[in-house]
Every structure is written in C-alpha cells, then in structure tokens.
Length: 149
Image (cartoon, rainbow, N blue to C red):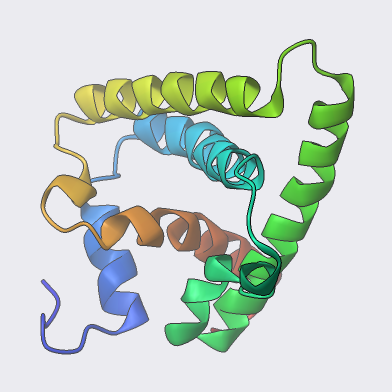
C-alpha cells in the first residue's frame, strides 16, 4: 500500500500491479490500454480548440511523476498522433466515431480482463490509477531495455 500523502512512482506501479497478476488480464491490458490511450487522443484531437489553447500539452501530465517516463509517454503519444492522421485520412467514419468505437471496445476488454483476474479495476479505488495504467506498461518496456526511471 502506498502513502497517500506523497506516493512514489514505484509505489503506484506496485499497487496497480496487485490487481494485474493474471496473465490473461495482463495481455488484455497490453492491448486495451494503448487502444484506450489512442482513442482518447483521437477524441481530443477531434474537438476544435481555440488558437491560444492549442499551445498547451495536457498529455504531459506524466512529467510530474518522473521525467524519464514522461519522455517515453511523449514518444508513445507521437506515434499515436501519426496513426491518428492515417486513420483520419483512411477511415470511412469520422475520426471521433472510430475512436469512440475503439474506446468502448477497449473498456469492454479491460473489464473482461478484470473478471478473469477476479479483482476490481484499480481505478475504482483511486482515479489516479487511470493515469498509471500506461506508465505500468511502459515500465515493463524500460525494464526490458535496462533503462532506469
């Protein structure tokens, strides 16, 4: 259990991992979490934003935890932005509709994975775990590459 006063990144990742032990649930998360991120980025991309606000980068929230993880997330978001441009140019449906479908299907997958796990999703206990999920996946990649965070 992490200290609610000032949780460390590792405390948050460890607690998130407690409800993600089942191999099937882990696999579901490797598929669905990036799809949810992709769909959220696409839905946000589809909303017209006034000029002065465009300069803000709300997806850099991870920088408040660990800069090295933030850099990884920026790279992930950049890749997703390229994919979104391709989807927007190629899809028969508007981008927002494609992303809404992905979002709903990915969340169905997430809840199915937690049913297999036999544990409730972490975010039902603490909403900040909605932001930890992508970092939880990224920390496994960093570990495989031998990178410290």
